[in-house]
Image (tube, rainbow, N blue to C red; front, side, top):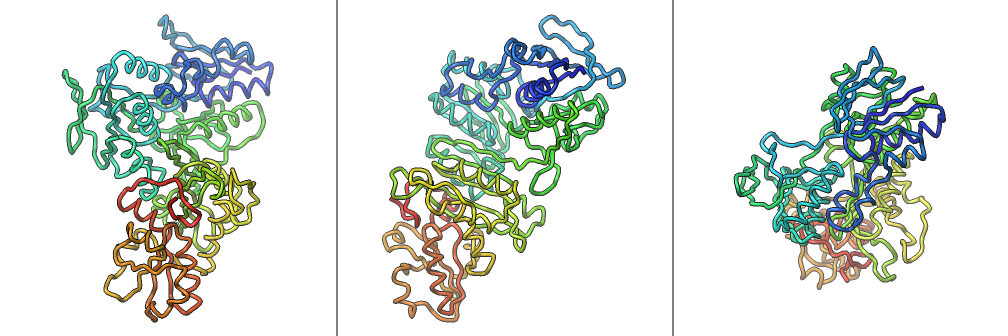
Length: 561
């Protein structure tokens, strides 16, 4: 059997190695348009920032090492021009010599990835304007910074690449302006959770311009990015507005396509041609939580798809069961992570979605160095099905998002998070892990033990005395800031001052993190009051409302150290 693979990196290289492990006699040819066949794509911004110092560390395999270990014929600088499905052959161009030739196949695997989107008005040959997708892009940006010492960079786009580049350019001493068309960065997060990142970017010196649409580039002597609101001069421009599937070969070969021109595949990663498979950023997959078709351009799914395609090519029935889009990102001192779907998506799909917001610490609060995180866990009312989670904070974010991602994949119900038996020692966690705490809270909500109100509800709360608004924090905390209309009644004084709470009116309670207000609600509800607990606490409210930066040091109840 002869297998030709178009494209290396995550999907193609993984498939090549797997095919060899399954079939020692297969002939495997891998065609890669760039000069690098297997590299750490996600590490590219950190080379530019100087954290990864050695260029060779970016390269996982070379053509020579691939041949030595796997006997895979890797041909870099080789571009696939067309596919003749009837003849089962690929027309290839050697980009160094210009020679074209036909390469036959028994099975063909497409792993072309995605290309950086460049708006029409930004298509220029100006050497100060870059995208970041390949090792060549990385080296070009790094060399430009080394040779030209730019003072000011403008980044267009606030997704993964835009945020990573902002951090790493600041690390190199470059002043950064980040322009984002939407009103928030990092679209996998909801706007409330993204507010923590906005504050962190500003705190770290980034000029953040939200809600501005790119319109054009000025490249005549002075380089500038123009938006619908202004003009920003720059010495360096990074375009990070997104990616699009590299599906031209598939389309021209008559293969079935999915949304946004992606390559349609079945669960076996097979295209509409039984002899052709496709994996990675170019293919349409199923979103695991919703079952909807989706484009999810992440390295983890691409690697898994490459392995599954290889299995099926070698006669092993294997299925890809969808992607949750699990991701994690460092933004200066914060870590942001998500899995499943966000609230915005759940609402758009008509799902009966509820949520809890909590602010636990990453390990036992009495052990030095404990850092707070903000967790938002989404679930379906009635069924208790976990829909997704988002976490922003310090140490321990990655661990919790992985537990929640595993729970979603295993179809653990949201209340059952409380039953997970998770490892505990003071330097690593608490006896009641943050994930367990989310489960306790969800169970309380689902059985009616507590009723909630959320950030979006605060503005509509009447201030005419028809409801009672209580702040259960200490007087000192209250004096530092509080929501309009809320009066201070510390939870530790509540039992002795129940007469101060007007009877017959709904009571809305807020504290710093949501814990003390929950305790207050339990006291009030058992004394006949109709009570609602604010989800997330004043800390969350203040961050979303004002974009205040996050203090990572806190006690378990949310009081700042």
